[in-house]
Image (cartoon, rainbow, N blue to C red; front, side, top):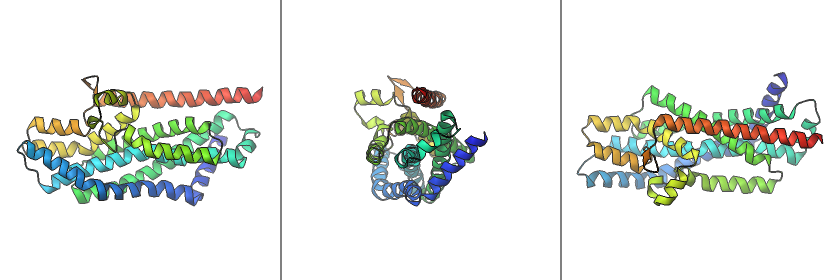
Length: 301
């Protein structure tokens, strides 16, 4: 345990000491929030307002702002929990590039302890950045229209924690096979550009073709985004019900922004989403452990 604690402290210190790595991880979600609020807010507002008017329903600006704000910041967190994990986990690759990994492997520290140290430090670093991003996002929602309860915020923290574990496990597996700066840059670019679309953060899955919707419903990140959406907008939908909005209008909105997900026509319940995400995290961690065990056996031969 003392060796693991020392490795986690060492990796975390190096991450926060590297100003380029730390500030790029921290600034990325903040830049995304500004871009979302600047370019997507009006688009989402017009879309929601047009949908309401089609049903002959008018909505006040505060409720509209809460709905748009909840969708924007849930999308932001869904993306950052994974993309920031890939950025935080680059220390694993940097140690290979600089030769520090070789020095660590010839020390008495076990390879399994070394791998676990990378995982825990990456998870902690990513969680800190994402919680800060969530705090800033909540300030934005308070200005746009606040309908959240303490329970909603706590559930979103749980969602962020699970998504951070998912992103850390996924990045640990991918980064294990990287060994150069060029590979680091390529993977970071691909993940940053593509993950937001795959998880339904940039564009709701309901707007994709039916075939693509079925494919994306096999991806666990999709359910993480939906969990965040449900908890970010629960209060908004409750307020709509109190104001007498027709149920078909509310369900239509939930379907359009992926609060409701359907797996081959069957609605996926919230508990099932947690089960899928949790099982995926456990499976990815198991794969990561197996990879390191196999690598250790090869090194001893």
